Length: 195
Image (cartoon, rainbow, N blue to C red; front, side, top):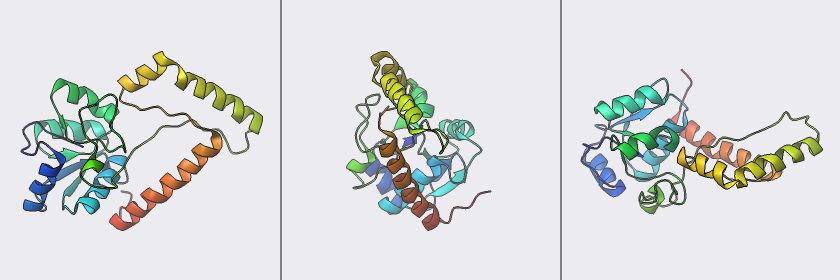
């Protein structure tokens, strides 16, 4: 959750108080309908009981530029896309959407510390076609997990704003199902439609 450094709120509780005092006056940038940035913001709106205006962009680049220029006030940007701007002081991180604080932003609290139960994370994974033989899937999984265990590779991913995690094919499949169900509910509740 990032804001322009000139935005009056410096913490998540201050943001919530400001949003409640100024309903429908805060513009929330989104990378587009159904994007993680929009979904994470929609979940925040519901859980924090605030009324923000969603402004959809065609990707995070233009949204982040407008956030830095002050045309919009807040964005639930991916750490990977915003970390350089946070480190350079062009954006202020109010909170991270993960369940735990992140190694690359250790002083930034989780949003869940102030909005109990809030957790919203995007992920990148490696998959194979459904008919891939199990022995091939096992080999791929072993090699991917070995790469994720490599300290230098892991450090590079963290530096890019990612928190790598290794799992088994069964665990990853279960994760995908649960993730899809969670965000499907948010999409239906917010009546998000593709453009």
